[in-house]
Length: 231
Image (tube, rainbow, N blue to C red; front, side, top):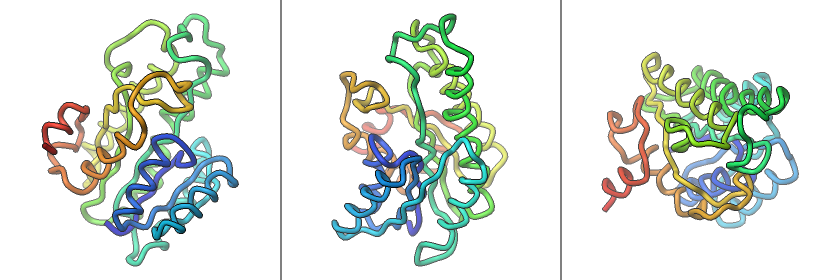
């Protein structure tokens, strides 16, 4: 793999994935809304011997994402993009404490705009630059498919993001799949008990470069399947 794009890479899962991909030889083009934070991650990657290009970009803005993908296609040793990780996301409120009937319209709209429309924009703007054999990966969780009380707009947005991934999977030559990470301890989840981001990052590398295309394309791959495949 030459070039990978990771959105929402200034912290949590996105940062862990970017660091791992760079450690394994990929040039990572990473973005977040905060220029200072994403630049710091890139500096750490470079200091560790990796290769990274940081960009301030907001997945709610398709023009930001268009520029991100155009830049990424030129940054690696070879032209184009080999992997896209549509990781950027938000959760307004405390996980499990945001029932849908109590969501504000502004929180609902922003959650869908980030977590669903943002995935759409990320993959759509990458399409003209995807190399043969490229893959796009969308992190998700069980609340997208099994409703649980208190997860409100976040659960709705994840279900929508998975639908976006499935539709791209049947329409693109590139492999597009969903990774169900289970509970991960990040700022997004208010550091609720779960796995460390570094523990799930290898799942992305496996899905991007080792798993068979049929295993990932149009599918939701969970931790159990990943662990069984990599024993």
